[in-house]
Amino acid sequence: MRIDVVSIFPEYLAPLRLSLLGRAQEDGILELEVHDLREFTFDRHRTVDDTPYGGGAGMVMKPEPWALALEAVFTAHSERRGSDRQTERTTLGERPVLIVPSPAGEVFTQALAHELANEPTLAFACGRYEGIDERVLDWARERFEVRPVSLGDYVLNGGEVAVMAMVEAIARLIPGVVGNPESLVEESHSDGLLEYPVYTKPSSWRGLDVPEVLLSGNHGRIAKWRREQQLRRTAARRPELLDGADASQFSGGEREV
Ligand code: 6GU
Image (cartoon, rainbow, N blue to C red):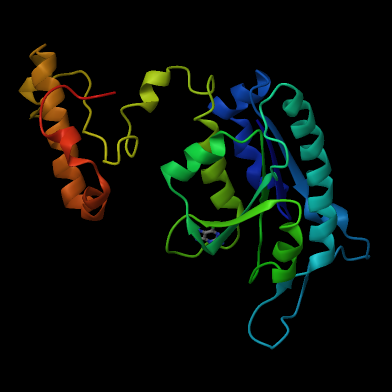
């Protein structure tokens, strides 16, 4: 997968070169390019923002640098998707996806991460200040499938931290990025529920014991206990998730994976 990020703070994205994602880049599974929006300005002060029409607090990101930056990204993605098309990985006429991190976007979920992990290319446009001139999104829709996406109901200073979270959630679903694909199956949200609690050695630590069932070696009992823990934890912490979960999956018997 090819991922392009446009930001006025490219250094903010440096941690995406570490750990599993860093390895994926070395292995050629993931290609990550971070672009400095200011490279697409031509004035002495490399200006990327201006005052909002209609008044109000803060500054708004100017459209011109964004158009140039996104054109450069679009060209790279077209070439990539063109070569993918020959190997039938892309459907003709599909626009590349452009994610615009914003607290005013649709909420990022594991389901959306899975959907985006199937794309051959992804672009992210990191806004700062009060946001990007809305016309940039309208203009970009002619080339990209534009999706404003939020991490949740709170406000960050800009899109960079949100992009780190989204890129990590998406990239780890690409085959080969996480060493043991089994670990993707039993984690939180993979079946619509929170994951069960986990323990390791020693079996008794500072007077606290690992639940006896986990030491029993009885795989049926362990699976049942874990399923109950998932339901109990989800009911306590995120009851709204239970409405969407398929209850029949948890009514007994072996867990389906
Ligand atoms: Cl994606 N961006 C910003 N700036 N704030 C957020 C967010 C995104 N998601 C939650 N808060």
